[in-house]
Length: 473
Image (cartoon, rainbow, N blue to C red; front, side, top):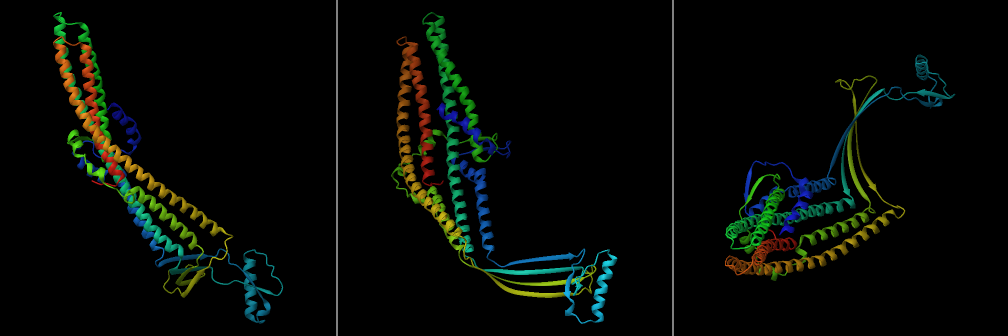
C-alpha cells in the first residue's frame, strides 16, 4: 500500500504543469461514474484533443478549397521618377517637322536637366507612355486537373480520422487515469480509517496494560511492546494523511479542476471492487482490429500509402484555366480620382498546362523513399497487432489474478482478525507474551493493507483491460 501511495509524489510532479486555475473555492462531490463523465468534458488533454479535431476539419476544408474557383485582385500604381528613353532608327521617320520637334523636345529637356546628350548617329531618342499609371486587375482561376490535389483530398480525410482516433485514445487514457486516481483516494481514506481504529484499540490495550504493570502484575516489556506498536501506527497514519491530500490533488488534475479544489468522493472501496468483478470479460474474445492502437497504426499505414500516391502524382501534368479583366489609367499628373480620368479596359482568357518531363530521377527517388516508409508502416501494423494480442492476454491474466487475490486476501483478513483477537485474550489472561500479541497485531495490520490493495487492484486491473480493448463507460 505504501509503495502504491508513494508513486503519487513522482507522478504529481510530472503532470503538475497542466494545472490551471478554475475555481478552487467551489466544492465538488463525485461518484466514480460522475468523475469519469466530468473528466471527459473538462480534462485539459481532452479539450486539446477536441481542438485538434476542429483544426483537422478546418484543414480538410482548406485542402478542398484549393481546387475550387479562386478570385484575386490587385491594384498597381507606378510613377516614373525619370522615364526611360528608347532609341528609334531615324530612317523609320520621314524628315518632317514632327520628327524635328521630337528631337528638339528631347534635347531641350536634356539641357534643362543638365543631362549630357550623346545620341548615336541615325537614331532618334523617344519616351513612351506617361509618367504615372494605375493598373487594376481581377483574375478568376480554376484548377481543372492536378493529381496531387486529389491525393490531398484523401489525405485530409485520413488526417481527420487520425485526430478522431487520437481523441478516443485520450478519452480512454483519461478514463483509466481517473479510475486509478479515484481508487487511490478511496485507498488512502480506508487506510486512514483502519489506522485510526487500530490506534484506538492499541491505546485502550496500552492503558489497561499500564495499569496492570503499575499494580505489579505484568512486566514493563509488555507496556513497551504496545508503545512501539502505537508509535508505528501513528507514524503510518500521519504519512497516509499527507498522501491522502496528494491523492485528491491528483484526482483534481485529471478532472480538469484546480489542484486545490475542495473535492470529495462518494463511493465505497469494497463496494466498488465488487462492482468491478466481471468474469464475462475474461471469457470475451476481443477483436484486435477494434482496438484504438490498431486503428492508429492502420491510419499511419494509410497515410504512407497516400504519400506514395502523392509522389507518383507529381509525374502527371496539371491543368489550370483562368480569366481576368483589367483597367489601366495613364496621366502625367495624379488625376486618377477625377471623374474625367480615362480608363482603358482589357480581358484575357487562357489555360495553363504544366507537363513534368525530366527531373534527373528526383521524382523516382522520392517515390522509392515513400515506398520504403510504407513498408515500415506495414511492419509496424503487424507488430502492433501482435503486441495488442499479448497486451489483451496479459490484461486478462492480471484481472483474473486480481479477482482471485481479492478473495484470498479477504479470507486472510478474516483469519488474521480471529488470530489477533485470540492472542489479545490470551495476553490479558497471562497465557501469551506481549511479543506474541505484537506479532499477531502486525500480521493483522499487514492483512488489512493487503486487502485494501487487493480491492484497488481489482479496480485498476479492470480499467487496464477496458482501456486495451476500447471499453467505454
